[in-house]
Length: 135
Image (cartoon, rainbow, N blue to C red; front, side, top):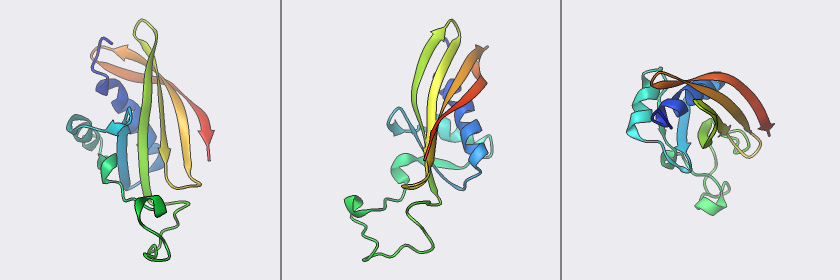
């Protein structure tokens, strides 16, 4: 890849997060917490985001059972805590890539997209966005 992968992930995250306009944002990249570089870069776009490991955990498999610890104004099917993720970058041709990204906001809330990017100097720009699934 002729540019830092984070400079291709950044425009995807900015587009995806800004479209949802959420306050409680947590990010994972390729199954791992985002790094400080991306956190700072998102802040430069007015987006306060945290690594996905800081996401509040709900459900019996995390040890939080609603009957024992009732949610306060939170429906676990549609939570105010949104996890945004980038799952892959695939080279399609010289300087052109696809990126799979999406969000999860509860057991009945989420979506995935495929973004098409092109390298422009030291950065990537989004050329198209296609929804792939919603729930």
